[in-house]
Image: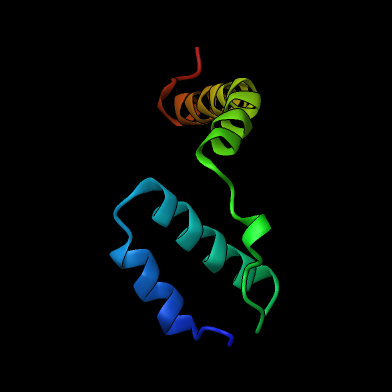
Length: 84
């Protein structure tokens, strides 16, 4: 039986344990990308899979955040600097 969007939202707000939270987020995201379908059990990441996924992406995420902060600082510096 396919869950309603309200049931998915309720499951996400009621989730307490990490496994419940991962399952609820996976269900919501799967629905977003596959309208009208429930998330299959093998598409829900385990804690270890989530840790591995994050560790692979953290260096890239850090570099991207640094680039954005530098660009923002450069953009904000312009209006406040006086032409000499």
